Image 1 (cartoon, one colour):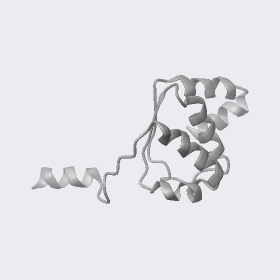
Image 2 (cartoon, one colour):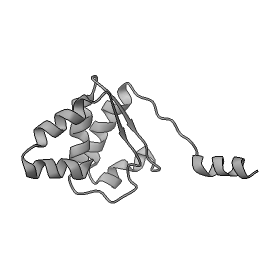
Image 3 (cartoon, rainbow, N blue to C red):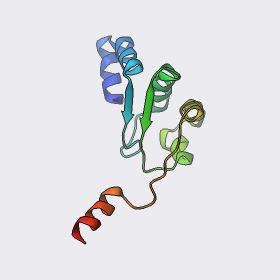
Image 4 (cartoon, rainbow, N blue to C red):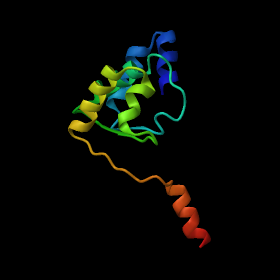
Length: 110
């Protein structure tokens, strides 16, 4: 998604692309922190969350604790603002240290 935003900026379509991301009924950001993110990732994510705040649903999955997102994204202030909006009407669901895939595989084999 962040690469698409960067490409849209190069093409001169950033504003339209951000509006699309802001208006989809459910935006799923899966595996946040799984890959190294660019230097503007925190600002881009904050802008998306701010545009969606109170208007549409956003789901973020990560294997990293929320407390580590500031370090992960390299901008604690932007992450604090983003989390403030995400958590205001949101919920944190912790699935535990083991992967759901591992649990399902164990049940299927056992």
